[in-house]
Length: 386
Ligand SMILES: *Cc1c(COP(=O)(O)O)cnc(C)c1O
Image (cartoon, rainbow, N blue to C red):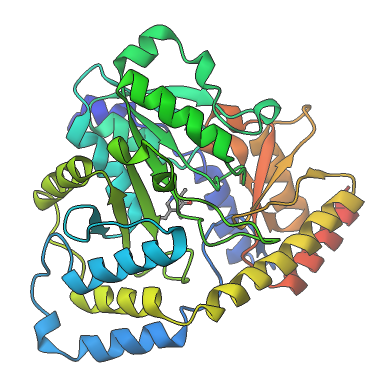
């Protein structure tokens, strides 16, 4: 009866629907499903963070509307964390904006800078809100294929002249979901030069900055000369502290970009529950050995899964960061069919690559979000159907 807006009609279809339905059906039938599909930590939030929330929740001062720009104590904690982690000084008043999870900030940001007909340069495959946020703002995504032949980095030289001229924003996400690729300094330097020359804003999604292995430490784009004039970086407590359900993250970077996002948001939401902000302070200021043990846990699972898959002849590179394994599948089958068959024959859920965009076709993604015993069980099941 009612006609959807053109913007909503233009949103990409939700390709995980079929898999979701099949997964629910299999569970309802009582089958023992191993779910490697969702990028959501299986471990609980650390106790010291929950304790901080419990305490803060008791204080009536925290029950009222929070400040739109976040509590000063949280912005100071973020600034301190940034200094310790990246040796970057950020002004907590103008260069940091707490968010209700980084997803909302990423999705709302294009509203501040896109006009009809403007483009965003969007990697493909990618985290879906880059495309969704662009379309809802009236812009159009211009896809930058992430190909194995270019280490899953966008080839900036291949962006056509008119796309460069019409683009207002470029999205990058390293360590990357879903391909687990990491960006080197040389790529970041080329990116900054490209964006500055073409007057394009860089959105850098750093959700996985703390989930890295073998001594690798992902860098912030804000460490690089010239970046601070043109970059907004998105961070999240979700993956770092097993807090996906809590909804807390932040943006940091250029004051004009931060201010514009704050202006958009002041018309949409009314800040993060103050008790959650105080729990966020506890997380950022908390004991750092927690992060080491988290990375050790995923690293052990990574080694079991990747070495097991390699022994079965599958093509999966061991990730240096993130909790995703990006697996090349034989070309004779689509990623949706391949994932469907894994579920039907082995009761294993994996995400078809095409769900992240057309250049994700030919791959499936597995998340290291089940205990190692379950990963071993998954390998045994795969061996049986192979
Ligand atoms: C999980 C994830 C996020 C984090 O989202 P929140 O809204 O902070 O929970 C952001 N970017 C990517 C690429 C992710 O995978």
